[in-house]
Amino acid sequence: MHVFVTGASGHIGQLVTAELITAGHDVTGLARSDAGAERIARLGGAPIVGSMDDTARLAELAAQSDGVINLAFKHDNGDFGAAIAADRAVISAIGDALAGSGKPFLAASGTMMLVGSTKPGEVGTEDTPIDTESAANPRAVTEQQLRGLASRGVRSAALRFAPTVHGRADLHGFIPSLIAGARQAGSFGYVGDGENRWPAVHNLDTAHLIRLALEKDDLPAGIPLHFAADEGIPFREIAAAIGRGVGVPVESVAQEVAAERYGFVGAFIGLDNPTSSARTRELLGWQPTHPGLLGDLAEGFYFTR
Image (cartoon, rainbow, N blue to C red; front, side):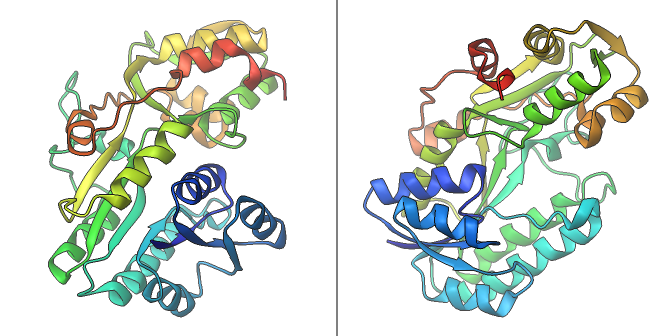
């Protein structure tokens, strides 16, 4: 297949690009910079330097491909509303380009959107109804937009990544951000008793699952896929591992303190997000084989860079 990948030089994108090329696919990868383009070229892909704002160009590249994987997200300097609007514009443009083709269109989402849609203590699944009306969950409407492409002849799927997609290539994700916050604060905190749970997935298992989804001709259109190997690690255990790695004390803090001390990720520390990937595993025959989050933290590489 000839696959168009946005964000192809990023953390997950470069691993997906390598996975696809190793499996015999051709990749055209979008990068924001010349440095990113060089990374794609080194992997064997065909780089395109461009912007997510150029939706006409994205649509053209999508139409020329056999499938699209949208991994880029335009953060807009912390303006999440603007980033969501840009994401929806991209999905609309690519969806229009692929309409009626039956081609796969896989787009990044997140398991955190399950928060507020599950009852306390309940594990979120691929079938959990998502509250699209909540102002706290703006990406739910984006995912609804993606699902709607199924009725237009697009094999669309939402890639719901766990908040921690971890591994040696993870340089700027949630875990590095929390480690940086712990170093700056001189301590690390969990909220309340720290028994709220976070799912996690290794980035190499993530790349493999994306390829499986792309290659599955009978993937049900509009389906969400759950990228969760660890279903739910009590955050207190994650905090303890970060505290040991950084060499700082760990304590219970109020949610507002976590948000103030640990940057944008601090706002999520107290959220309970246990997530099952049972249906995804059964549908695609996916079996994670790489270390879990606590195993990666114990390895120590997160703390030596």
